[in-house]
Image (cartoon, rainbow over the protein chains, first blue to last red):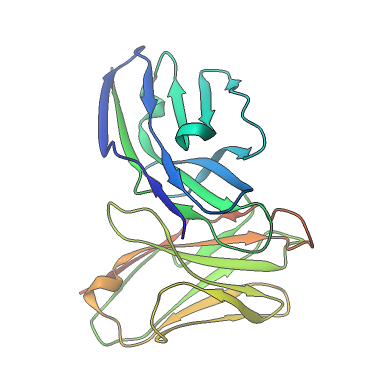
Length: 115
Length: 115
């Protein structure tokens, strides 16, 4: 069985602060994909990143960075210099690398960035 | 935008009624997956349709059913609505290819309220 845990239900930061969203996953698959999605108030899931389980390199994209650690089954997401527009619910998700299996989502972390 | 559209945007029904939600997949995609997102939760997989056949199902009762049409658009039908069916319903389209990962593109969702 697969499981994604986002222990932080809500986080509130002041604009320009850095913030890290935690994600811990469980899977018996040896290969899998991990994802982060952003869900603004409009409801649509916005894809942020996909990471292959073979690739443990950290990734930086602008103000976003991701830290994948297979040894601790974690895939954490950091926003540097947060902005009000970053306010949203962020979901971590998991799926096996091959096959047609669905995404398994965590419960999400609601991030509020205060001006 | 992903090119995946859903209708209607919002819907209010009463307990016991039936509802049909619609999803138009992205051009070139042959697979549609449906997810239910209850308030404060992550999306949960309902089922997937590939070439007009159900191709995987989550832990949802038979009163949740679906269809996929030759143009790959899809419907989600829910009979005998219950209060707990109130949720955001998301569809995601993808192109199922042998041996590859099937990137899922999400629509904006239909918010269903059952009174």
